Length: 235
Image (tube, rainbow, N blue to C red):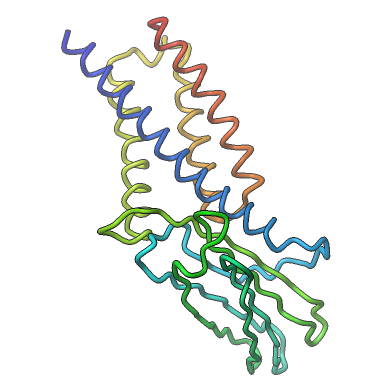
């Protein structure tokens, strides 16, 4: 009886961690995809890669957006940039120029808040860096999901949820496997594969690789369905 209770507890913890991890991944890839679509003009500029936005925010807070400019060249560069931030009626823009000595990195920061929300619960940012010293125009976009939650910041919610998901995956799977004979369990690799797919989905989602995150999420959902069916059948 005790073994069965531990097994059920492990299954519950593991599955809750899976759902939480997929929820975080969904928020990350949804906002990243919406940000890409929001500013997509079909120009197809190379990626800038230095834009960093929070994944989650609440309506009551100000979020910090960071753009990091790297100069690997042996000469000073003076990149000129243009930034567009979403809004309920139209995006608002600002621009500037940096002086980057050789082999240095500089960052600029600005805040976004509830006044920048569009499409219901999102804030979108687009950064374009104009041609400089052999570099063509480069672009980067990001999206932020805004939650109607009071009492904490989006960053706190995300970090706590991420920690709970990761701990839950390890703890739940550990409890589950502690009640079985690993050497004769034919389905253990399916459970482990589910955990790995969730971790990969989380990683790619956090990195704003929404296409890869979507693929890993779909694979995780398929494995989740298989594992649920096996558990219901008592295997």
